[in-house]
Amino acid sequence: MSAVLNQPTAPELVDERVSIYQPEQSGLVFPALPSFTNVAQQRQHLKERLVAACRAFALQGFDYGFAGHLTVRDPENPGLYWTNPMAVHFSQVKVSNLILADHGGRVVEGRHAINRAGFVLHAAVHEQHPDIVAMCHAHTVHGVAFASLGKKLEPITQDACAFFEDHVVIGDEAGQVSVEVQAGHKIANAFRGVKAAIHQNHGLITASRHSIEAAAFWFIALERCCQQQLMIDATGIVPRLVPPERARYSREHVGSEYIGWLHFQAIWAQLLETQPDMLD
Ligand SMILES: [Zn+2]
Image (cartoon, rainbow, N blue to C red; front, side, top):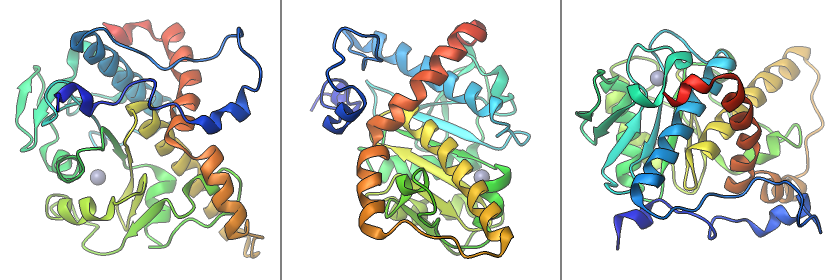
């Protein structure tokens, strides 16, 4: 199989369920999935969206020193990944300072060093799951706090339903930096058929079989859901949960990879207008 096919592109990524958002609206402005005529064009597209995801993380306040890494699989060489440079603030990541690394965390292109310990976590997941094309991880306030509880998100809202039966809690061997290396394969094992993981005492991880945009948006959504769950838990009042069958229905309709990609298009457009230097 051509390596290019490892990075799925339109039209197979279109989710038919998105039609609920655009019934009989043909001819009106609506984000379109990209198509490419060559690998170089596809790679440039991926790098630009990876940078936009980093900039979005900066806007969300997801930075914590040099912690946090986002990866997207190269469309031509599926064993190589584009990622953000170490010790560069998310707000200062740009196309020209991205780095390309292999499974072992060795930089094969780019001037900057890599957060090797953290990257190993991504590499293990990418290696075990050839279909996973992008991942996000950061040490966020609410995600890390919620992760200390070692429990799953409950279907407390329609938004939280996006993660219903679509995330896992990785319960042990977390909480110390060196474990990030050792836990790589354990985390990889956990990413079977789900888009997110809560790593106890550590933080949130999202993965996408669709795009870096989907991985980034679902990370933003997961952090927000963790914040809301903590707020609700703090009231001491037991919330009314969405019943399982309704939560499942909501997840299928508003929690798909395509919907994550679609959500990110608003962020992309805003960043393109306000932070054009990201493309430098
Ligand atoms: Zn970490």
